Image 1 (cartoon, rainbow, N blue to C red):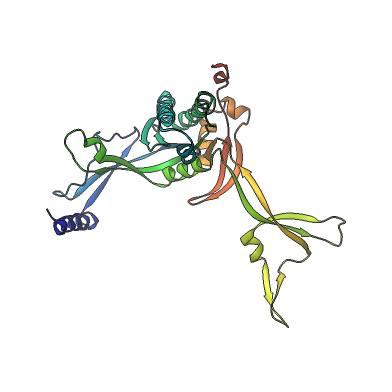
Image 2: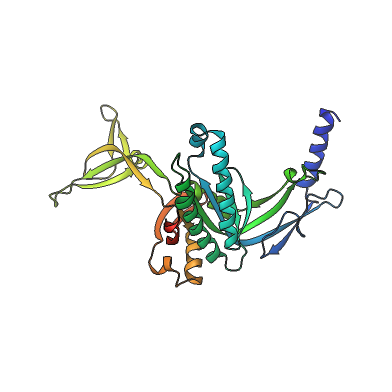
Length: 314
């Protein structure tokens, strides 16, 4: 088979799948689909159909912080130990709360939970994961600070089996499940932000009101500050403030940091409703915070909650 044959084959297959005559069947699921389980198929070109599953539940991402730096600073043998302990520990923690690990990509792991009791299991799994990563993995890895970020969201996800049939030992490498939908994407973004500190340039603006003796200072984003300017052209080009009473301004750097566990408002509300007597709810250890990320512009709840028993381990 030559290059022309490969291009012709892939063109014909793509055209078939994308045509209106190719049917994609959605099957509702409450249990977590598996790659070789019933109800999920590759593209069937003979019958022009494909079976997928739709599940509504919690998805969790955990990300190992500073993995790029670790790869430059640590020896391959040390990293082999670290990544082995990380993946194995994450799997144990997730499975303890009935979750299933569905993707391991080096420094990042994705887990799905059965729909029943998903809020309780996902949040408690996150607490267990933070306990493991910050108080066990970090304690025993002496060469660098180990931190992890954890993100959780809830919603509908389409589960699609992708790849191709292969025979022999390479078969598992050629097939995978893809989890499509906003929840998996949002949980991943929250994991990227969790347990991190950020800095950004801002403009501090002071207003002076005639009826006050002090200045009223506010912090504005750079774009917001420039949007508040207008240009005049009387004798020369001059920038003026649209708002009255602005007295002074200066540029500075603002810092913000996030806790180890971030969850969307729908996850927190579901957890609170299903587990009102949980210690983290009763003691209000989860703090609300407004964020704006692609696909989510709402309140999240954050906390660095852990099981205190881990402090006794040596």
